[in-house]
Image (tube, rainbow, N blue to C red; front, side, top):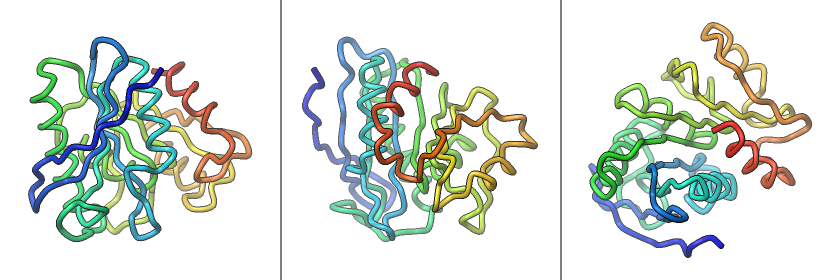
Length: 202
């Protein structure tokens, strides 16, 4: 049975970051920081895709930190279109590592959060990277190349981030993309399958 989620506050570069901690089931064997979709479209750390990933990873032994990035919910600061949010994610990583020293680090994100996680991974070392419905081609700064073992999951019928855009980004990297046939951006009706696939491919 999943442990209760804990609300904590993490010091960020422009103020406190309202964060949900989903504890590892059993002894923690890793830490994960999972970033939410675009807050301008209502994205927060309670998003179902974010929480599905957190629960799946917690069952694999990861202590999962899901921050509201700057300007979202009770987090201080103002939305910065994926720029300052990278600094926020890295601040949460540093806090998580301080709470669980020496454990492997996973970065993850959904949509806008995937863009943030990929950019954070470009600046810091992480052992794993999970990108779900990653927002490729949506922002002036391009989504960076990612490690070859990155788990990229996308819906075939994604109405927000076309699969074709993700394939164009992945192709020069020879990066596999796991496609959910018929799924839209929010993986409606496919969240159980999403959790299973994360665990199977991890």
